[in-house]
Amino acid sequence: MPLHRLLATLLNFYRPRNAWCVYHPPGPLSTARPLIIGPSTGPEAPYPLQMEGKVISGFGRGSKELGIPTANLPVDDNLTPWIADIKSGVYFGWASLRLPPSHPNHPTTSSDTTSTTTTALGAHSGFSIYPMVMSIGYNPFYNNTVRSAEVHVLHEFEADFYGVEMRLLMTGFIREEKNYPKLEELIEDIKVDCDVARKSLDREAWALRETGKGMLDGSWLVRETAEAEQDCGVKI
Ligand code: ADP
Ligand code: RBF
Ligand code: MG
Image (cartoon, rainbow, N blue to C red; front, side):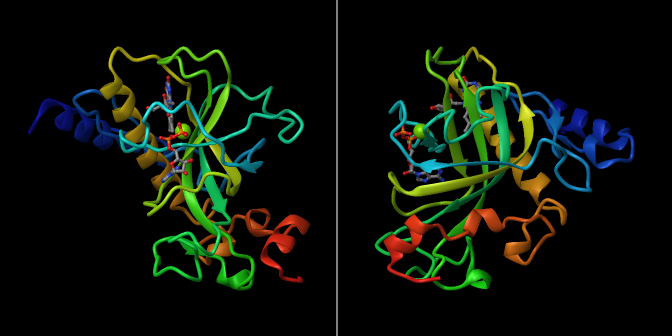
């Protein structure tokens, strides 16, 4: 057994018996990290936090080619009053997208069954809900001068969705943003972030009522707005 696996097995064996201490094993380029964030009773204040906006172009650094596309949202104090005060770092939670009918992953026109469509809230709502990880900050690896908010949706899409309305329900904080000696190390840490998000959200008090799998109130993610109603041509 490689040394890093042996270490992870020992860490998990000797861990105190609570959910916070399940570890993601270290990889060749990453250290052992807690795999589950937050208590089994659900998100703790100030979470869940809401954020919304239309997906904009990011820095064009080819994140998609690295297998980690990130949908960038405007960092706007008027739209998101808490954003200036929240610490930079990596967060996780739920994202909803109102994809147009022409998009191959649109809930009613696609054969895409892996997303959680919002049929319980009516066929016209047109939103799909997905788990997500996101980064808010200056990306020390790239030394950005502007603060960005970028979301990696934990789903494979068949086409881009620039300009689409995205809503976020952030349920918790994973870690501070870091600098890395190599891009591969950043990518490996982001992959661990994805596992942490999946595992942490896969608990009843963290999963959404709207998906039929949990207790958390995600109604805001799929709520109709006057704008959405106008775009769909539907009266609610
Ligand atoms: P940019 O620098 O413009 O943000 P990226 O390489 O980060 O470019 O790609 C982001 C775009 O990829 C998003 O705006 C979205 O349209 C698309 N995309 C496809 N799959 C995903 C995904 N799973 N998560 C986030 N964005 C995705
Ligand atoms: N950039 C950093 O410089 N440091 C980080 O610790 C960092 N963590 C990230 C975690 C997640 C979940 C995501 C989606 C992005 C993160 N980024 C980070 C931003 C990253 O540099 C950016 O998405 C690049 O475009 C990836 O190539
Ligand atoms: Mg991006």
